[in-house]
Image (cartoon, rainbow, N blue to C red):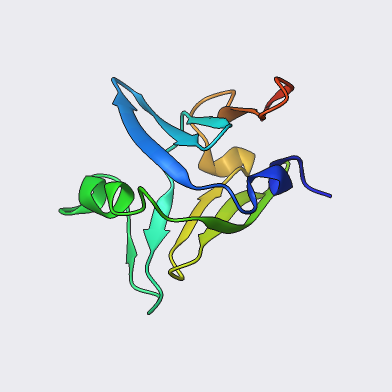
Amino acid sequence: MSELSTLQGEELAAVEFVERFVQLRFSDSLLRLYVWPDVADADGISIAFGEPGYRDALCSLIGETATTAALDPGRSLTIEFENGTLLAMSLRDEDLDTPEAGSFTAADGSSIDF
């Protein structure tokens, strides 16, 4: 079971842009990402950080509920929402320019870095 599976059923409450990273606040959990995830809508159209509309695409997820969330250390992080939008980021060493891609703090206070 993925550490992020506890996000299943949680609503995204806020998207916070903080200088060089983004925080995704769910009902009771916090996901801090130092690598910007790609956003793919239900039709599979993907938008990446730096492209026009990227921040709007992330913010449009506020109020949406996560249906699946998976962390595959060293490979990928994915979160799918009830509207079919998928957040995805590679965690492969060759795709990262930072030693740590993010952290997750669950509702029970437990946390992991990845």
